[in-house]
Every structure is written in C-alpha cells, then in structure tokens.
Amino acid sequence: MDQSSSQKDQAYLQHGTDVAEGIAVITHDDRRFTSARHSHRQAQLLYAVNGVISLTTDSGTWVVPPSRAVWLPPNLEHVTASHTSVQFRSLLLDPDGKDALPKECMVVEVTPLLRELILRLTGLVDKPDHKEVAEAVIRLLLLELTFQPAQPLNLPLPKHPALARFCETLLGNLTSTISIEDAAAGLHMSRATLMRLFQRETGLSFGRWRQQARMLKALSLLAEGRSILEVAMDCGYESPSAFSAMFRRSLGRSPRDYFQSVTRPDAAG
Image (spheres, rainbow, N blue to C red):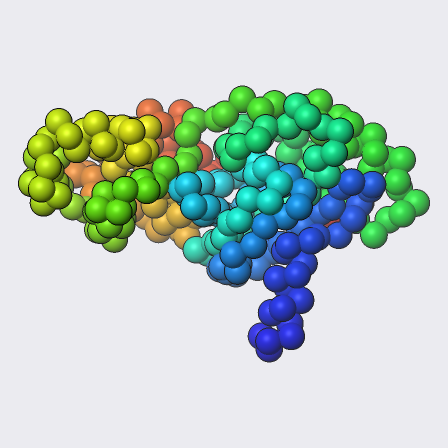
C-alpha cells in the first residue's frame, strides 16, 4: 500500500462516512492492521462483526470480540488494532444534545437486535434516498443500546512507573508463574504494599489482573484460529481443560462455542 492510500485509510478510520445528520459510519474489512493514534470529536461505538479488535488508551486496553462493542467518549485518543483478519463496524455519534451518553470508555453487550441495527445502518451509507429509514434505525438503535457494562474485557494499566514496567514484562511473558511475593521482592516493597498498590492503580488484585491479561490474549489467539491446546499453553494455563473452565467462568461459554455462535454479516443492502 502506498503512502497516499495509507493516509486515505487513516482519514477514513478517523472520520467515516455520514449516513444521517450527526451520525457517521466506518466499515472496515481487512487483514491485520494497526491504526495511528487518533481521536474523534464524536462519541464512537466500535463493533467487531468477525475477528477481535483491541483498543488501547492511556488508561488501558479493551478487547472487542464478536457479541461485544466498545464505547468511546469524544476526543479520547486511542489506537485500534487487529491481530488477524477482521470485520468491524463503527458508529460516530455527535454528542450534542445527548447528555445521557457515558463519559468513559466501556465494553457493552451487543444484543441480536442491536447487531442487526448496526449492520442495517452501515448498509444505508451512500443512500441519501433512505434518509428517513436511517433516522428511524438510529432512533431504535439508541433505544436498544444499553450502557450496562458487559463482563470486563479491558486491562487497566498502572501509572506507577515501576509497576507499569513490571506489568509490561508480564504482558510479554504470560506463561510466567511469578508469585506476588517474588514480584514484591523484585520491586523492593513488601507483599502488602504491592497488593495495595496494584489494587489502587488498576482496580484489580494481582491475580485477577494476570488472569484478565491471559484471557484477553487468549481471545486474540482464538480469533486467529489457534487450537485450544496452543492457546492454553501460550497463555500460561496448566491444561486445555483449565483454560476452557476459566473461559467459561469469564464469558459464559466454552471457547469453541463463543466463536462458533457468531455468524457472518449479510451483504449490505
């Protein structure tokens, strides 16, 4: 891809295409990609139809598999990436007059109706004669969009410099079995101090944070088509059964069922 094409793609990913007043749509079907760091003046609802997207801000990383969407408030700088082929649909909403919209980033559940409304709206791009239909879809979409956080699919990152470096090291080696005692010794602090620091900086315990990091990595690997055995070993689980049990506790379904339950979108129209 030449530089001009890349710049056009980045501009499109930032601004999208207007589908109705105050609403723009981004449709992206491609192989793995990483966007430049950017923000939108509008609020954004980012939905993965197929594949898994990760979205990273200064506060942490959110993972968006099928059946979930991530909500971003306006002007939040972020990087969007996919580790494999992906289909995502993103709605950019003008926040003016919509004071009830959340002011923080969150992962939300995508109901079957919400999914169809998103796909229907993206299918109305470049169809000005369907303006009334688009506006009706938008009204219903906003009614169906419930800002109740789904199971947490984000990984908060600490601001504390030493703890941030330690977490980056863990993310580079998720098979590590380092104990909190050894981690505390390496950071030259007591076990109790590290536990308090971890909770204060991330909102999670050390064990829960590491479990969440492994789960988010597992989602990306499963989306690439990796076997459950491979994913379990790469993410530090003792066995495929231990991984599957943790996956089911976290997301309510087995790894295989989680991805097989998602169908590919119909052709836009």
